[in-house]
Length: 178
Ligand SMILES: [Zn+2]
Image (tube, rainbow, N blue to C red; front, side):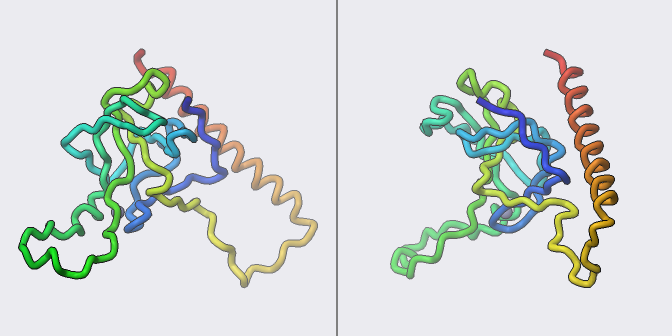
């Protein structure tokens, strides 16, 4: 069962774990699914769908069919498969960058209906960066207790931003044709 995502305080940028290419962001999250270990976005970039359709045998989505989603940069870097006889005797290379980062469901089991046609990314294949979430600047003076009010104001401003983004998303969902 897909659940509404937890809203981070600042937008997250999602990157291919192998090559750090930006593939999407939290502003287009549709849902997260713990059972699949995946999150589903309405928009992505630098990803391509495979031509062939795979039928899942994994317990979480058994029987569903999907096109694999691959990182275009990782795919481009993959050398052509070697076919010459001598290649068999060469030392095995370390595993190459994993190009697959998720899937686009073509048909699904009933409880995954809402993922169909969207971009479902494996959380293991991506990493995320929170905008504005840098490690802090050592040169800044330490906070003093008098800053509590300023902190609260900043938190309030963040929450207003989050509420606004939830409101916009709800409006978009309600406007979507059934
Ligand atoms: Zn990549």
